[in-house]
Length: 363
Image (cartoon, rainbow, N blue to C red; front, side, top):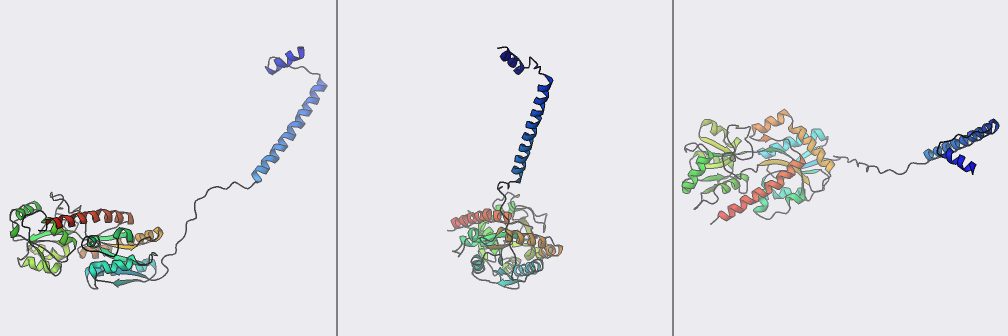
């Protein structure tokens, strides 16, 4: 029992074990041997553990490299050769060819209000080698007639390159100087004033329709053969007002025969910064822009769309390109695929609302 009590006290640290020197030395040698064997065994086990192949680790998928472009490209244009839009398309094609290292050919496909060109691209291969250069009219056309494609479903937005602000322009012989004064006069005497436009289904046409919505007896809308013809009719006193581009009216505004009193869009135009927007003048619903942009077929790989957008952004950063666009009455725009897609969705709704209101205003 005394041995039990001794070991119990040893366990609790309350006693010391006194052993003969020979036994104590033998015990120490035995403990050193056990310790060496233990350490050697642990080291071998650890070495084996480190020598084992590592467990599989989840790694990101390998990024697939896409070679682009690998052959000449086409830029499909829904306008005839020789106009402002065609000139812009050719300038872009030239710059893109230099940057991408392959020919970029302009393919004019006028007709059917731009749907012919759009249909070609909608049905083209989604490899980025066939692109569409179009304008905001493509968002309006589906509300006027059946088209062979869906703008949102069948195209991939790349970038807008320019906007074309439309100015509310009136005959300078009229006394009105603000959009509010003009709107009040038209409502008071609708038969005394008229709007002109040059292309059915264009933003100029729809904004004229929108401006006269809800006015009893209506305001005459006059169709002319192009924007230049509208301006000539205004100078002759046969049309009171139009929604026209800056390039079409700037010379006559400078001479004092026409007057710009407002501009469409959400911000003032750098072409005429003193002219207020219709929105800030209290006239809502004129926020959708007239633009020119580049689109690709649906399902074009993101890497290709990003490459095209990057190159277009670099082109639009060139001083000469911006100067040429401003000289043509356009506002240069540095855009992204995401911003372009957002604009398409929101402006499609705006144009359809304007079309619906115009249809409801018809007798």
